[in-house]
Structures are given as C-alpha cells and as structure tokens.
Length: 221
Ligand code: ATP
Image (cartoon, rainbow, N blue to C red; front, side, top):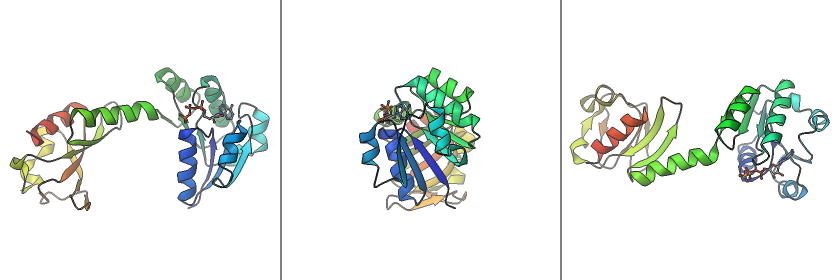
C-alpha cells in the first residue's frame, strides 16, 4: 500500500531516505531550509519545498498532520530537531522517525514523541567495529539493550555437515538461528532443525552480544 512520507532535512541521511522511498514507489514530500539542497531533489522527490520546519505555519500549510510518516532528519541543529519533532507529534502524525546526534538528544526526542530514534553514525560504528574485530562477523545490529542480530561465517570444519539439532546453539549459547546464508547467496529463512550447516555458510543469529562473541570464537577456532 502506498503511504505518504515527509522528509524534513535533506542531508546525506534524509536525502538517502527520500531517494530510497521514491525508488520503492512511495510518495515523498521533501522539505529543507536550504534552497540548493531542495533543488537537488526537485526531480527525485514527489514534491519539494524550501522552508524552515521550525516555523509552525510552514508545517501547517504543508498539511503535515495528514502524513502517515514524518522523518526528522535535521542533524546538527539539535534544538530545531527537537522542536520540529514536538510540533509534528502535536499535529497527530502517527509515525515519527527522528535522527539523533547523541544519547541525550535521543532521550529528548523519545520524550517529545518520536516513535523511533536512530543514530546512524553510532550504529554504523558498532557494526563495523564488530567486523573489524572478527572478520567472520559479517554484520551486527543491536536490536535492543538485550538482543542483537549477527551474521557469522562458519569456518571451523568441526561444525560442517551437522544439523542445527546436533549443533544445538540455543542450549549451548542461548542463540536462535533465524536464517542460513549459503555461499551461492541462497538464504534459508527460519531453518528447520534438520537443516545441515555446510562449509562457508553464514548463520544469522539472535541473542545477546556476549553469546554472539562466544559462538563466533567457537565457529572459527
Ligand atoms: P547528514 O549527516 O544527514 O548529512 P547532518 O547530520 O550534518 O546531515 P545537517 O546538515 O545539520 O545534518 O541537517 C540536514 C539538513 O537539514 C540540511 O540540509 C539543513 O539545511 C536541513 N535543516 C536544518 N534545520 C532545518 C530546519 N529548521 N528546517 C528545514 N530544514 C532544516
């Protein structure tokens, strides 16, 4: 179903959200105070507007309250990002995603009504650091304080040609295997217990970060 999105702030983050939404067939209104930025998106977004989103009249005249999703992608001006999130919330928008610069900013954004707060720089730093520490951790995403999703390549022959039932990762490491990626890029989602783990498969597992590190060590000893 087509939904309405408004992206406020067309920096690298807001810009790439805008582009990807349009590519997925969504309607996007792109707003930025900087005219040059807006001109860059003239032929990309469905509608573009030059305007200061901190001005309530601007948001009202654009009918922001009628949007299903608003993305507040203002970065450096923390005060503007908070104020805009607050106003959009008060207008009754059901889904607000906001970008935070730091933990304090994130907490305030949550308090004023952001439904989802993202920290792209921090999250990408965490993902890359795990991959730098272990070349077999192909990806790592924190889902919450407690749970992470990791993709780990299996390079220890001890694990090759065993079923998930034999390997018993849930009992041994508290980790659930949610998918297996084969070297030919085939992905087996929600694998059954009799699924066999083969050489150079990678496992997508959910569990806590320490258990992920423990399994990574075992899988690659
Ligand atoms: P990124 O990392 O996404 O490139 P950033 O975190 O450095 O961006 P900024 O460049 O500070 O973020 O802001 C992103 C965009 O938001 C800029 O193009 C800026 O013009 C726009 N912007 C900032 N404040 C407002 C505002 N009050 N109303 C509309 N647009 C704004």
